Length: 116
View 1 (tube, rainbow, N blue to C red):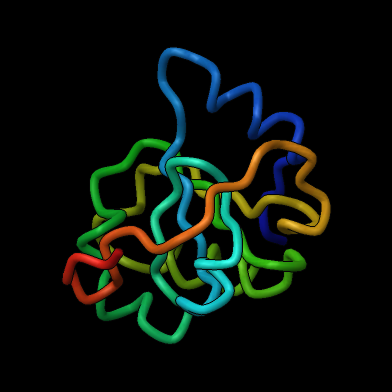
View 2 (tube, rainbow, N blue to C red):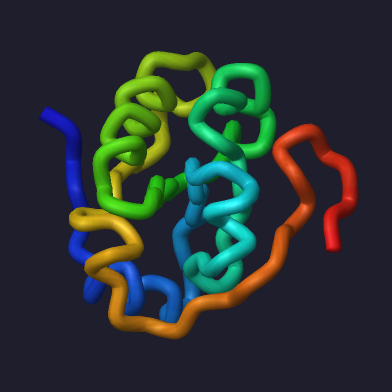
């Protein structure tokens, strides 16, 4: 069973002193349309080849549009070295359940190139 966290709990953590790393596993196009503020985009298809972006994080919350791909992301992340000590959770319901603000545009892409 994959650990899930409610969108409300994610919002509270993001306002706290030690916020989690929010990894949006949506495609770049989906991410550009709207994402949790401060999240990074690592599309699910690229996740394994970009584990360095999450390695070392103490708390990771995976996010996707509907909460399905993020469950897969949690399973993948939990299986790799460098994440074994991390708390890794999927945001239940995905962005469809998120009532908080959304940012638009791209962050630094999954390949490390700057995006605008």
